[in-house]
Image 1 (cartoon, chains in turn blue, yellow):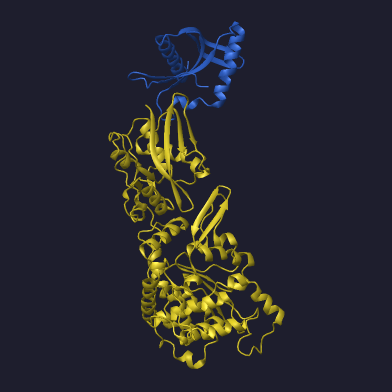
Image 2 (tube, each protein chain N blue to C red):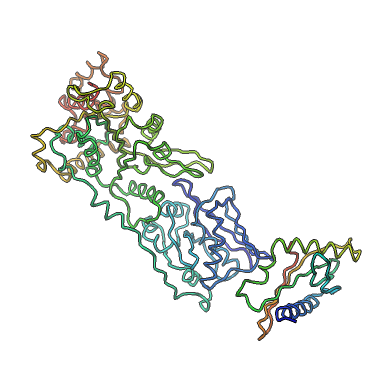
Amino acid sequence: MRAKDLLGRNGEELAAHFLESQGMRIIDRNWRCPDGEIDIVAIDHDTLVVAEVKTRKSVDYGHPFEAVGAAKLARLHRLSLSWCREHELNALPRRIDVVSVIHSGAGEPQLDHLRGVG
Amino acid sequence: MGVGRSYCVALVGLNGYIVEVEADIGQTLPNFVILGLPDAALNEAKERIRSAAQNSGIPLSRRKITANLIPASLPKRGSGFDLAITMAVLRAADDIREIDGTVFIAELGLDGRLRPVRGILPAVMAAVRAGYPEVVVAEANAAEASLVPGAKVRGYKTLARLAFDFGANPKDLALDYNPVDVEGPDEDSDRALLTPDLCDVSGQAEARRALEVAAAGGHHMLLTGPPGAGKTMLAERLPGLLPDLGDTAAMEVTAIHSLAAVQSSAVQLIRRPPFENPHHTATSAAIIGGGSGLPRPGAASRAHRGVLFLDEAPEYERRVLDALRQPLESGELVIHRSAGTAAYPARFQLILAANPCPCGKASGKGMDCTCTALMRRRYFGRISGPLMDRVDIQLQVERVSLADFGQAGQEEDTRIVAARVLAARQRQSDRLLGMGHETNSQVPGRALRGELRLAPGTTRILDTALERGTLTARGYDRVLRLAWTLADLECRDAPDIDHIGQALGLRQAAAAR
């Protein structure tokens, strides 16, 4: 596994723990379809949360949040629909969350969480 | 985290309005939105602000930043809002302390320096008038901003130092950064050198006298004469004869020039009457003001409290000349454009110069003139009757004779004549201030024939001329105004029959053609 993939994998792990600590129930991880991948699917009370996790070692090349643009958001919406169709959970309200993880390797990783971004 | 608030000024013409800047940091993906009718330059502020804040050591929040400029319906232009938006955003992120009614007017450089902006004088005037005396500007603008009475101006070189004074954590701030601004050429020193002296004009006693009268009474003037007679030379020497501008006038003039200047910032009030000399191909937008979006001041406004010289007046478009009638009457220009309406003051002294005919040879006996009578009439017909009616002095300038030409340097210089003009102006303001006027040229006809009525015998030649129809009623008043100025120059209390005669001569010299 390459270093960047390892970093991403670790970030997703940290993010999943973080979301669980916020009272969410993780119901799917790394769900793939031809259109792309959803990092985390969770249930927050009665809402289905599709979470995108962005992990960086530093902010030298921009904050992780800045990497989530309009195109990415649109794809997340499409993916969330695909996921719901496949799992027949269309009745649930949905939202998109973004979790940023900044982890240089040394020290505590910094997590940040935006709810319902679009 | 809450809403950050700061203040700025939006200029519409010379009128400024206080703009409240609200900034909010939302819990969503990074974005920067500016609301409140920003123009292109103001929308680019986002990128300047992000870079400037980053390079000053106080990076902006990685969230959605919304800046709202209130009132939202007022169109806002230019880069002067950069600093106010930045301060509101920093306050919203709790990076700095509360901003209590401080107005910020400056553009930001990507490196975090504060750059000067245009029109700082009218903007600060508006802020003080609206009850916001605390103003922060770029250091290069500080001298100009400080000209406004009552303003508490602070000039800063960099955003980092300003943020430090507003309580930002000095740990990360780039406080050592000390940018060096490139100095523009010093315009004021150039101008002093360029003021020409009246003693350069050889001979032309009559024209020099007329120029003195025009300066003393603020009368508009038309100079006709062949090419090379010295019309332009005379006109260029008029501003030197005019007295220094008073405080109010100097403030108005400096405000206009602050708005019209491209880069240099005034360091002191403009005390000398300005001189504007547009080319005869100028459009009406160039003369009276205009441009896309919000109108900018034109030559007529830049000549406010000074001299507007139109050389080769019949060559101007008729439309342009007639557009001057409104400011001649009201001293103000109101210009409408898509982004709003601007009113600029334009109380100038109009000096027109013209050749006697299209070929320019119709002076004296006019033997060499190749123009037909019709051509000549058409030529002067461009200067419309209503415009000519407002010109008190109509003077014919002849070619200088050889005898006079040899005498160059013997004539009175500007200093001596300016002293007489100043004394005459003093007498006028002593007499007229109670009526709300400054110079004889502004006195309405009603007052001339009322409070300032002359003894019946004095005006006999005028009455005869009026009766015979060689002088119109309006012309009658104009002769009276000139006569008062002539009396003021000679330190008399009222014009006598001699002054009336001279005045009639100054008015009709060209009309006799």
